[in-house]
Image (cartoon, rainbow, N blue to C red; front, side, top):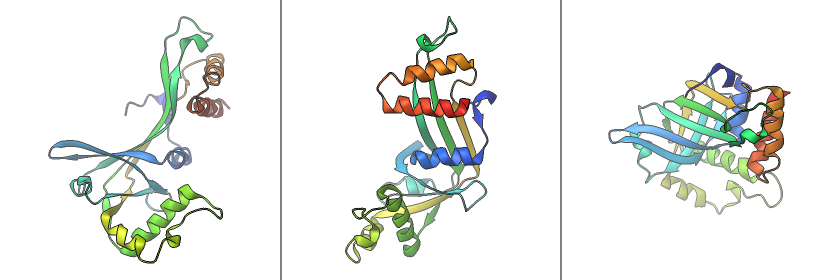
Length: 206
């Protein structure tokens, strides 16, 4: 990833927060026939490994899991992103751009085959998105043996993160007044993603 110094983030906690807030990743690996990619949610465990460990699963019928063994894989996590109009800047002339936040995590995947570990991972994944409450679904609420049976149709894996990089392109190369103008412009579009990007830009100004 092209990483100009102005946009580079090297604060682990900030990168981890981006990943946790945007867990739906693109997992990229190589094979004899070229690049492969799968779109999937990944759990981040910051207590394991130098930079943390990612955990996920794919359908057993998805052959990428076999072909990525022994290879380096890349997980891409995209945060809020949006078009930035030059009309929002005080400095003129200016040109359009795209602001965004993204994290790249690299590592060598390894399979998780022990049934108890797979079920524990599925419980954590479900809890992450279901949240708490009386109506929240959980693995334990399924009929006995149902999840265990279905678990054979997936392959769970983990990726100890060997290298972690992040880019927060949020107008750091612009003046404060230009960045304030972009934030104000994003708030007028009616897009929740644009508003989220504006909030992220505001946090980086402050």
